[in-house]
Length: 206
Image 1: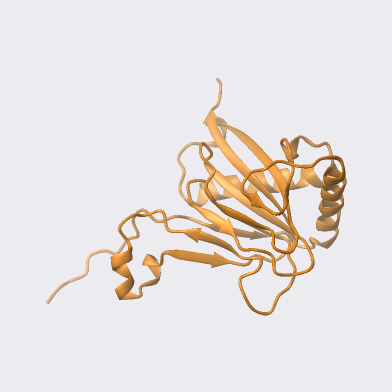
Image 2: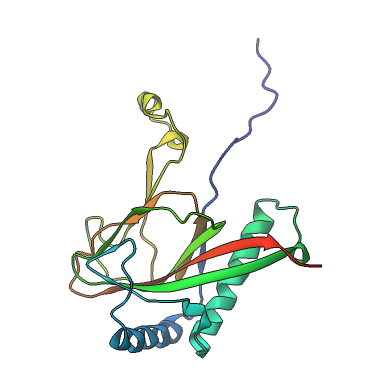
């Protein structure tokens, strides 16, 4: 007879999802700001393919809707720290958040990438076209652990190689910046708009 003592998850990767209640007017304001910015800038070339990526730090913009999103992102980041049991208190940390806006027209997508040097990365969904089938609008995460293909024979959820999510408008996802991710091509005629950000901590000056 074998007596179980303990079961624990080791080296797991935390992913958080949040929702902004009553987001319709908020998202409309963000979308208007995005279109205003795109009209004055050709954008930057990063992981985006066939889409538009804003230049500079979006959170430097002195616009009410952007300021609110920065506050929501900050709240999500510290909530995540609390949930993972971080022992460094807020007064010990200096937080820098860098954000940008993405617009993916039909066929636009984001290639697989990570965000080196940051701690948390997040995405807030401003406009997500509705579809009935397929992968359009989905973000996919790749398991960062090595030597996992031999585990496929067990068909165990903790050892799946990939995980796909399709967040709705008004949702924010937060994940460790080392996690490889990419966004499937937009199959809809409408544009998909999102705002991504990186959160980086340094020791606070005393």
